[in-house]
Image (tube, rainbow, N blue to C red; front, side, top):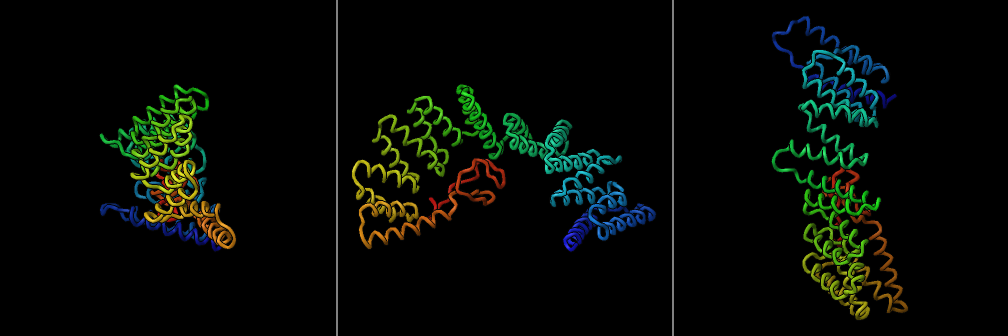
Amino acid sequence: MTQGLGLSLLLLLTVAASFLLGWRFSQKRSNIFKQTFAHSYYRGMSYLLNEQMDNSVDKFIEALEVTGETLEIHLALGNMMRRKGEAAKAIRIHQNVLDRRGLTSKQHHEAQLELARDYVSAGLLDRAESLFQELIQLDSFYKSQALEQLIEIYQDEKEWSKAIQAASMLSRLKGDKEPRELAVAKAHFCCELALQDIENNNLEAAAQQLQQAVSFDENSVRASLILAELAYRQGDYQTAVDALKKIPKQDPERINIALPLLCDAYEKLADSDGLQETLKEWLERYPTNQLVIKLADKIRATRDDYAAADFIAEQLKRKPSIKALNRLVELHLLHSEGEAKENLQLLKQLVDKVMAEKPAYHCVKCGFSGAHLHWLCPGCKTWGSVKIIKGVAGE
């Protein structure tokens, strides 16, 4: 009961604010109209405050007629219901607005946009898509918002070709210079299509999609990575290496995702020296903990554990790192005994615990964090915004 009253009061305050901001009477309006309007308004408020929530919305709609002056009140109430998860009530409110005559085209389109958003909230994506498409075809004032919503729908439904078309239309609306975010999104849509083609063993079509991705975003790390995987799958290991070598220039923060495949490709080429040279070059220009560990592993394979440990210790002096320290402890454990070994095991347990509790990635836009890389942020649904965490406990 208290919760229902609290929601009623919140709705009352929201609608009242909308009323105060949006209700502008001309001085020439008649006193009769003012009195009728005020009576309907306060009667609606009374319903919201005193009736059960299931009935109060319907009675508010009945009490307060939709006009140019009251439109903002109805839209505010509908949006509030949608944000509270009451999609069905929001649909009823916004549909009621659309059923009324006498609104301007812009007012009608605004209500249509909000109704489409209600449908998205309710999971009625076909209806939402239809309304958004209509707003686009009408070249309405809300065309840009409709396209943004459509892109999100197509992402959720994995309709990547439609997503590219909608994003391209939105880019044209934005002007001569395409927003970086849209270019990045279109490149990822192409990558998604390439992955589908690879799954269907249509490798030529996949390669074309990856070329298209690079045309949208020349710094598409994901396109380079998929191209390298495709070349590796076909036995063209040198092409795989060449594609992976582009990644540090495209985005130095993405080096770590290239390392496993880079090592495998060089191994297939039987070019250990080439791998070590590449790793050293990358470490000099774009230092990361994973590069330190990979190089230490190569030194260990060609020399011994002590040389690898000395290399890591030298790198730790330059840049403290929990991950590199953990690897150093592992190497020393191999040659320790007695109390020294017990102390190192305890240290490793503590370091492992710290590493396990720390997320490896975070979104630079919304702050989402997690243990795994997501090309599309689960929090804000932005493409390419999830980056590896840097610092002593990260990279």
